[in-house]
Length: 276
Image 1 (cartoon, rainbow, N blue to C red):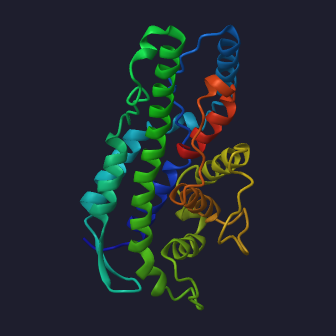
Image 2 (cartoon, rainbow, N blue to C red):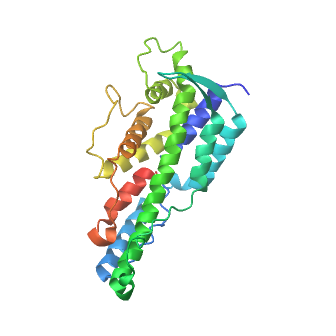
Image 3 (tube, one colour):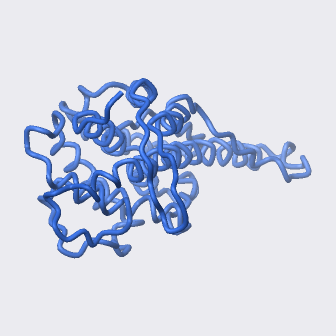
């Protein structure tokens, strides 16, 4: 099967769309005890209902979207040769599909906060409830982190896949970008408005709002943004690249159980960044 601009755009924008979906599915399973926590959770729920967007509600379920895109990449079965600093590598769309399929099929990562206790906590109901709450919270958060990492790996492979297209592009005269992730942004900026998928701008705007709303990361420095404007088609991809770097370099925060610090909205915003 031949590599086409249309197929490359479909796969690239499809992966990008993963990060721009709002997929808050109520999987936090908070174990609430006090009336204050109950009221806090209800207030958060009301905010989430108010945030529901009529356009975003048209999108298919996240896992279904990922699985469909994974199947497309597998059927496409394109291959290119990518040269890094050391040698040549064969990059395949089937590998991209494998990562996306793993993300689609991932239901839950299990964290066992009881694992290193001596069992005496079983005789104290508040302590037992606290361990159960932490198990649910960190399992849910780890699931979001892992899904993000799987799709990020697919995106990294996609960067390498389209790197040869950047190097051979006649429209880019000064090929000064060496990182495939930056080369991908340059190619996206060359697209015509008609090349963009439906609701593309809305998805990017949603991602920007989610990022700006998250106080845990919105003050962290953004790399590779010199000369980048918010109106650029690639702006959302630049944000995703930076979020991926936060996770890869260990500076993306591990959300504390909001049952204890009552920061339900802070926890929610971190999950939105990972799954929106």
